[in-house]
Length: 67
Image (tube, rainbow, N blue to C red; front, top):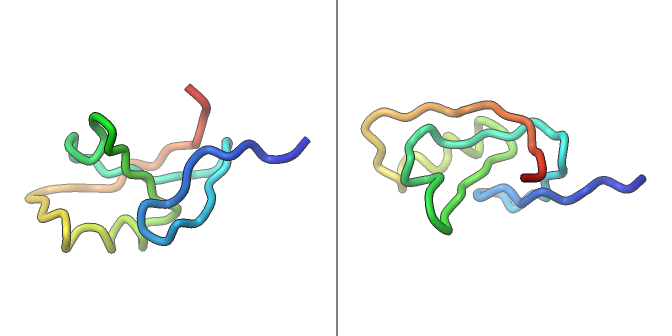
């Protein structure tokens, strides 16, 4: 059975698949509305911090799943 696509990393654009480990930003504005940022690793999550200007943020580790 081929892997099921989930999303692409918001920084490096790597394809992410259902069941893979992903990272999300802990700040609600990064995960609300049409903007749902998802990252393939903590390095990509770290790279979005300078442009996001968060006061206090951390990476949430999850597994990609279909809703």
